[in-house]
Length: 466
Image (tube, rainbow, N blue to C red; front, side, top):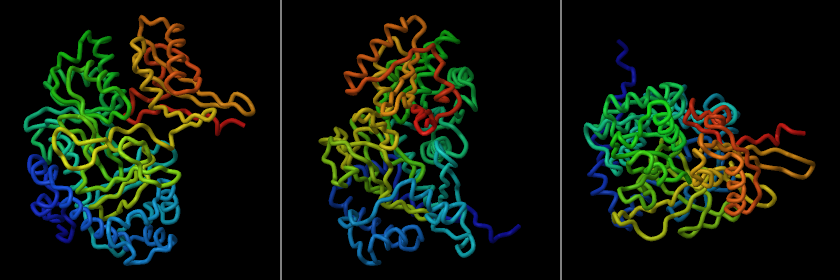
């Protein structure tokens, strides 16, 4: 046996890490309620460590030098605003510059000491998925943050937790499993998406194994409920779940809670960083894990900081990553800081929700339209099952149209539903959209709902047209 192999169990001092990044009740007692001045001091210390690490990574050395910065210029968290932001396009350029992983990965296989590494990617909606590699410390802090959100949502030892997030290159399914089994005492049942375990089988497993905690994206959670009712004559509310964990965006929490008879907890994360924010028991805004992240909400045009309640683009800075630091990453996600304080008494800032992606936004006759906002209107109507897809295409030399294809419930009057939704969308969004109503399941070929958890809601055909 080659004893020089980098064993994972020897790669970290786990007790020291848990002292630095506590989990469960200890996190709530020591960090969640930490006085703001002490939290700021902790952020300052970790931020400056990240800046020091950033100068050792070719991607940041180039980015910051081109912006006229030198080592020593960034002396405090107040200087964060002087750092140039970057986005996924810069990461793609980095991969082209230094294939296959990019020079944003600050580990060189030729010169760096061997270490156990975990590999995942972005969803790869366009082009090849974007690779990301995590060191043991990176991965464990991500797993700890994932477990924190589970504890805040009521997960406890011996809960049976079914995970319907897709398994494979993306992060969500595997990261959730790690958080569950490493730091909660709950039992993860990782079924994956409908492509891995057919939806009918998922329901049968829930019933047989007495699942009481469920993970899934809102569209698939609605789909499970529809299949249970249509094919098994079963109301999923009879399962008696206590918690559902999802990434709501602008999907209706109330609709899901009514369907399932369980509390729904929202959270937000990225492939690069894992879980960043999560609901507490009060579900009045997602608490940022501020000992791990600094979040900015900025006007993307002026880079002016947004006030609480004002929507802007989210910029993420991690306070723990080593292999590929994340320092002022433009996530392209639109959000807003929540106003006021949470009844739980937590001192960390909160986000309202994720309203959509700025790079998914369509400008239609001078109006900014987010597919997620369209979906929120569709979900309101009782004659729709909530499934939809938006198709944008040119209809003339200077005109573009968005057609919203909506699934109807079996008993619905499709013509009446189309008229009602067209009127409501125009009222809510301020622009006329075309509405086409189809049978239940007919949008699946566009969205991939039954096959993947990475649901596609926007089809942009303009680039394919002359």
